[in-house]
Amino acid sequence: MRALIAIALCLCCIAPAWAQPTVPSNPPPSLPARDPAVGTTPPIAPPAPDASPEEVGHARDTARAAALTPIVPHAHDVTVPAFLLYAEIDLPILTVGLVFVGARLVRTQKAYCAPLCDRAELNALDRRTAGYWSTGWGTASDLAILGLGVGASTFLAVDEGPLAALNDAVVIAESGLSATAAVTIMTLATGRPRPFLYGEKAPLGDRNSTDAGDSFLSSHAAVAFAIATSTYVTARRLHPTSRVSYGVLGAGLAAGSFIAASRVLAGKHFITDALGGALVGSSLGVLISSFHASPVTVVPVVGDSQHGLGVQGAF
Image (cartoon, rainbow, N blue to C red; front, side, top):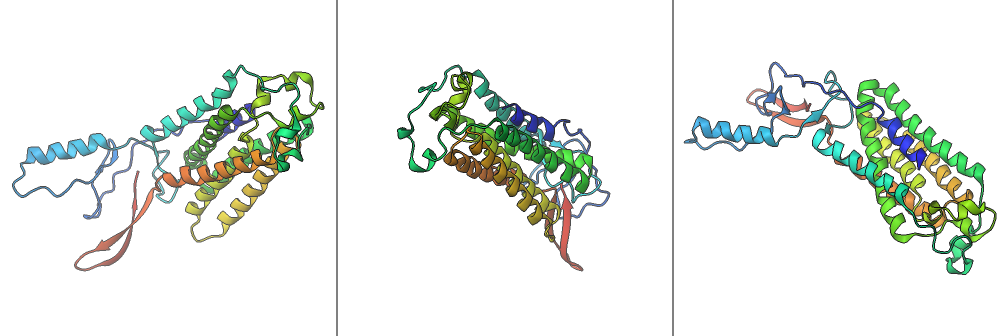
């Protein structure tokens, strides 16, 4: 659990700076006007011919009040960062994720069958790893997940600079926290004993601990695959025509697989725990990162004397 919290702190150790958006000198007539106070003002429907200026102004004020508040590290290059952050969306996600992570810390019940469980209760696949215990593999999994978080942060910092990297690291952290939150709900609901409870290799204190009933699902696997897939989505947005994103995905999945296998060899999780965590983490890694809009929008440019595509940066 400490390793998971460290990952979140590693990815979003410094909150992105609040910055005022840049107002373009000559915005295209087909795009919404820019408001220096709140970013891009949402467009309103064309007013009726007999609408009074007061009614139009009220409609614009309403749209401005409903607009989200952007968290922007800088607006010098509309192709980076990969994601748009908003105070009304991203701060609540981070808050809920951190609260759910802490749910395991307040658990007081030990596993129902502690200190020794019956292997006959397990399915044939999980029975193969019942009784496993290895502190070495447990340490390896903790170090590997920390390394994965540091590696993702380093890649972003080198690729797009520190400020944009901090912005995008928040989304990756949200993916990991969301995966942990989902896994925590399942873990507390099932109360499945860990594999080391089906043998006597683990110390008696570990078998009687409250953590011994937190087997399903593997939070390490979920976080690892969430980081891997959300970093891939980030890299794909930053390099849409390059194969860099596939290299990032391959490295992330390899690291995630090692972490998941390490948790099984350590006796912390069954094979089904690791597989389930990997699926949940991968799904939320793609979902959370894809949920965030890109700062770049390709819009058609149509006029009496020009045709083509224009790139609109939203900050």
